[in-house]
Image (cartoon, rainbow, N blue to C red; front, side, top):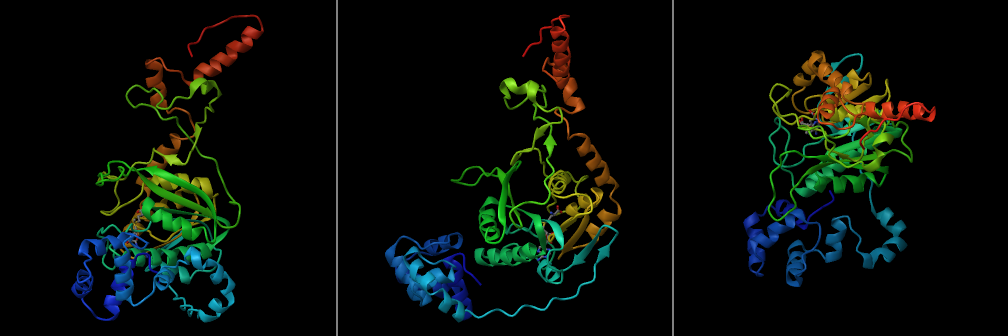
Length: 414
Ligand SMILES: C[S@@+](CC[C@H](N)C(=O)[O-])C[C@H]1O[C@@H](n2cnc3c(N)ncnc32)[C@H](O)[C@@H]1O
């Protein structure tokens, strides 16, 4: 595997040689390097500045700095010319990994829209043909030590987690049809790696920031306020892009707009504003009445927007991390086909798909609240508080026409 931190490299040597972590710390202690300095290497992908620390690392690993860099998938700038001059020799020295034979899985549940598989997503994807899906949406565990169903480890080392992501991301890329789109949802810290890896085989499309509500502050860092949703396209152009319009954001107390649209109000599309790459209107599913399971679950509003934007009816949507089945239920309510897998409990997903009345109601309500500049409730509030509504401008247009005909003149506030 590729290493993403020197700490993981140290750990792998300790494990390979059946040593204890204490013996590793003692080795460094004898060279005046504290445990804290070693532990700090867990989250970094580069060498420490301190020369004696670097020497000690090389000694412990019995590797040169160049070898350590190569183990971390990096060719230092000084060596790039000779690396490129020796590409043929390097390629000859590398031996190809045997492809794992695909296992044949039968679906845990299927209906006329889709198929759900119970098992590890990588194994299941290996059994699926190339270019068979139009959209991939993936919301993997974030490696933050959460408890999931047995068999799911959410406390991997940095290298284990990133390597694991690269394996399933590669499979997702293979499954995408040309012109298909992939969205991956994660913390910005991991999105950096996801985006750089996907960029090796796909075209970058969007990096969407999803406003995170009620998070805890982290010491000496900016208050974490968004999740990342990175999106790439297979080939150079997305086959489908259905523009999404949403209502203007207003204060829920007075109905006044939150952002200043200056003198352009009368030019605003009554069907709503175009969705930008900052999504502030997605709320977490927290209330026990709306939750379908005890673990994390995304809102159907998020999936509705992604699926509606990037697919048409009949297209195939794939999500390797089923969770509570949000992606599949939204896909089929929007008349898309879906494919999915889940390593943990699948019964939950099956039940949700069989009893989708609650989701269907919710989706209907959400759809009534899109495609307009203001929802009904907001229009009432705005009128009451003297704010403009679309009616004012259609009235104004009518009056302008009448004025041009030399009839009447009315004065509207701006
Ligand atoms: C963050 S949750 C997904 C939640 C989902 N988006 C929803 O809205 O309900 C991640 C899910 O991936 C599942 N999972 C973890 N590792 C997996 C693997 N290797 N293969 C398939 N599923 C896996 C976990 O059991 C968990 O349910």
